[in-house]
Image (tube, rainbow, N blue to C red; front, side):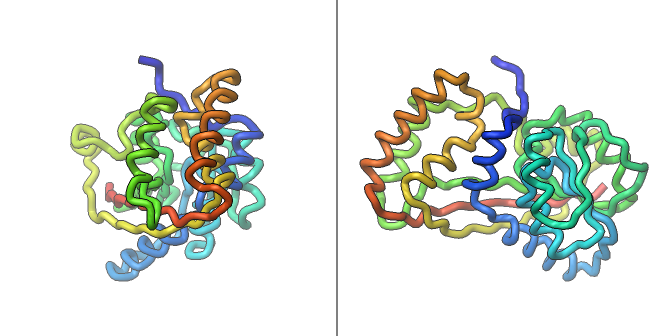
Length: 253
């Protein structure tokens, strides 16, 4: 099995990611804000870890002004820096120059699976304040196209044949990790919405996923041609409503 590595590193793919990934983060952050308010939890300082192109940072900045965002990819940060007035820093998740006990809240959107997880959790414990909160959210396409009962089967059939999953770690801390690092899962927040896409937008979204990003240049050309042929027959010239779903898990330390 190939080693796990973050595939989102090039300028062109960062641009595609920024343009074609659905910006769902307002939904996730709104759920987070409601939870914090319901528990009277005051948050003064926030870190958006592995911020990518800044979609999550922009949503967080609407709720938390003392916000720092970091990512290990120069290409991703180039896109992120125009998203809002947060402080952006080039930094790996597993080792940073942040101060001990600097943040009340650490957000991690769509990235935990790419980390060296024990190193990250060690660093997270160091830079979060006592009783700090770690929020990990993941989000993706459900395979559901509104009004087309056959689409989900067709979608997964194409992926199984042409775009197998990239090597990756678990999406959330495992039971063993939670025991070792004394994490407590304090809340699970769920959200979903429909996103309207035409064929070009959907294909470009699919090409932002890790199972496309791990391909070499020749394989990407073959796969992109196959994507266009396959999905143009389904979409035609129409836009479709597609169901996306996500989940945030909150952990206290």
